[in-house]
View 1 (tube, rainbow, N blue to C red):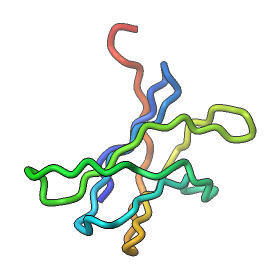
View 2: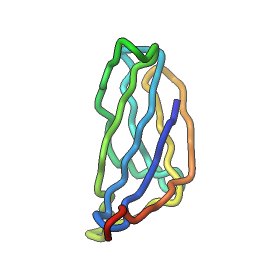
View 3: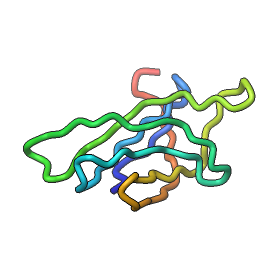
Amino acid sequence: MLREAEFNLRTDQLAVVAADTDTSAVLTVPVTATGFVIGTLTNYHSAADPTEVQAGVFKVIVNGQVTHPAEITVTSSAGGQASTAVSSYIPAGY
């Protein structure tokens, strides 16, 4: 279900990619440790992929501060969930 969770250290943005075989499922992204909901993923259905690919890019702001979460959970409205550590990177060329 959870394919990618990367934090861009240059832009302070979290990119999340997940999928669900239930094409009507809504996937939300909370921080695992706190339950703080970062956002909801957007559907990107592809005929070449048998699952419903969903993705989102977020700035995680808690109490006015940009936060780099250590772990996120993706929760499906269909009942499933998956957690992963968030990797971080600096884009090439910086």
